[in-house]
Image (tube, rainbow over the protein chains, first blue to last red):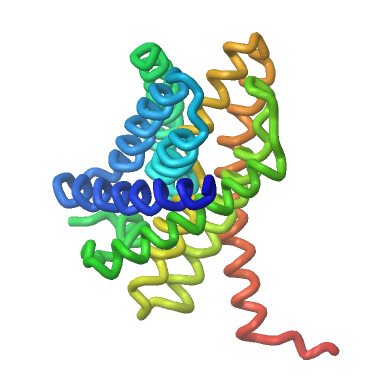
Length: 116
Length: 150
């Protein structure tokens, strides 16, 4: 049951990340990976909010492990940072790491505060 | 004009229903694998999140490999990259749990653990993404020109 909820949440979170990525990419031509930063911050905010709510194993499986886990991504984040560094944009690569971690941590704290 | 590494990042595939279905199915599979890893390697709240670290490092290694495989082996299969990269590996790795793990370690008073986990994940993932590409390119080159020795 828990596994089913995890898969269900992720089956929504992953394509939503893909759609956000396409929409942001279509609207601006920056080399900076704004789309991944956007989903990582949004997912961290929501996960913080859920973590502050009274513990509910089913909500955790569906919305936290499944949806937030799949909406956010570490593999694309590290790969895009690597591409920036390899193209010679070392400052943008460093800025991407700092922005994701700083904004992601801020978002999780804000979410926790909002949730409880 | 698009920059060269944009092209390498993602080909201009449209978000068709088939693509979205591939990402969705892949995401479900990847998240199940992450969930299974978390069950196998449990950690106390505020402790060092080995399972998240393992998922994020192995997922980064694999995305480096997938990028090379798609470019060199499967350039004419438009669903493979969305399924494997955005889907399976996107669902398998997680950024939100990573930052929550850091917050929980700090809240538990384990600031050292939080900092080591933060740094080890980000440097390890970058190295893994690089190594995944290098090792896959090496493996493909070897297969194309097999070693004549027995």
